[in-house]
Image (cartoon, rainbow, N blue to C red):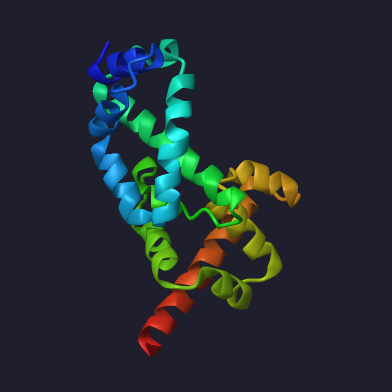
Length: 181
């Protein structure tokens, strides 16, 4: 049993002071979130997180090493952020949670465009309805391509091709806007 799981076990059994120790163990993930999201949402994480930590089934993660446990807790926090943002009708932007994804160089553009361009306007002006639908479902709501393809009655391959073409359009428009400014 690693140190974090031991702290979680003690926390779930009433040792409230372990909350701060657990947060210290995932300090890197916490700092990343703090830099990436609005301060109000960041503060709300710490209202919800204690309840979530009490509900973690330790039997499911007791064999994890420290690194896997830190990643697991990072994902718990990411999910809290997604829930908060959905409740507040704020788009969930995948770039906040880069630590959970491995991007190739083509996909690295996805991070930059979300950070610098008013995305909603860009989606409306550059993409057609189907492309916009696919991009929003995939990157704002983290819906798998398979599910999206079923909802638009297209194959997964075709849906991926539409998504990639839409990303290319967004990248071109982004670069054009960047040159103009």
